[in-house]
Image 1 (cartoon, protein in one colour):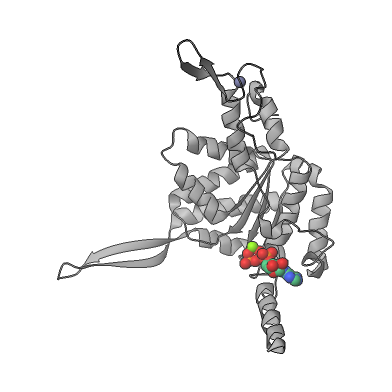
Image 2 (cartoon, protein in one colour):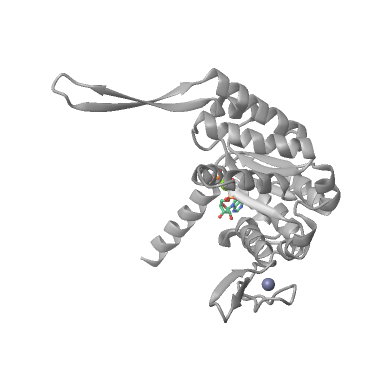
Length: 290
Ligand SMILES: Nc1ncnc2c1ncn2[C@@H]1O[C@H](COP(=O)(O)OP(=O)(O)OP(=O)(O)O)[C@@H](O)[C@H]1O
Ligand SMILES: [Mg+2]
Ligand SMILES: [Zn+2]
């Protein structure tokens, strides 16, 4: 089933191969010069070629398409750091990747929870990389970036609906750092609508978080309240405090409950922060040189 009307099929196929659309790509209909415009020399006017809609859809899709961040591009099961990670967890991820097509078809996801710097994002990237390599459409976002993107689309004509639609329809949505920041009730609602749409349509999510499911729901229900007060001399002061918000907590619980059903129990990764170990080793070796 395609998320696009039939005339845009070739562009979706392009997007699935993960290739960004080039603005000078030949006209698929053989009508325009590849610019997406038809120029009438006599009147010196231009109108849209039929291919232009497809071009716009393709460049939007390319912008949304998940790219593995540079740091994780060389990630592999056969190399460090994955080789050094707990085998019980790594083998669960390996099993998921082996059955990737079936998992994505049934909308079964995966999530990883645990301490900072223990390899959660690295393992999740292995899943996204496998999905991209086998031709699936993937969107990769950290939650803060995803929420900013949603905020930025507000006011754009249909663009928020468009964005939510695309986030709901990619084969795999990878959300990194769930629960990493406080958000507004409105943005939490948007996140809920994405997760719920994927839940209804049986589309998979891969997620990482530092929190256990119950904590995550509670965290999502908290937000920052800023109060501005005026002093006697007319000066204003701002006070920011974290408050819990009952209706947001319900939304948080709804999100987490769907994730548990879609992804099962989170795979736990606990231990030392490997980034700090890495830094400590570097400091030690420079001590030697000095
Ligand atoms: N078991 C490990 N052995 C060696 N290096 C590791 C191990 N786990 C993680 N690393 C390294 O530690 C760094 C952090 O890994 P990663 O980003 O996957 O952690 P994370 O759990 O997602 O952290 P955060 O909670 O901060 O997002 C990376 O450079 C990674 O290569
Ligand atoms: Mg991470
Ligand atoms: Zn054209």
